[in-house]
Length: 108
Image (cartoon, rainbow, N blue to C red):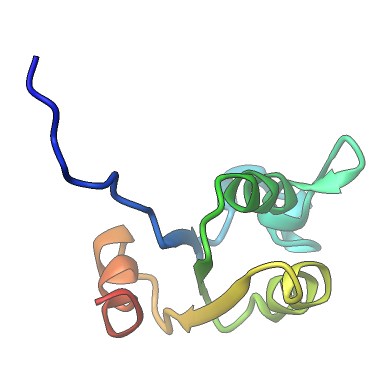
């Protein structure tokens, strides 16, 4: 087997699409965004961030709709000292491909 002199690639960014409306979880999501619904003793999105930090990813891009400011507040409060946070706003629901394309200026 041939050994490669190439160093392993490092994942620098994680992208979390969180702009969806959460209609499948109504009526709960009429009060709280699905990402902030508690599972155990933490909001769902908290678990994703714990895994991202454990994986030593240095930066996260979170895609939000304008109505989801509470997620932005929560993430800044809980994680701004642990990982670099970027937020992208998807103004109109136009699908996942559109949401990811909005991250291009940040992730290249």
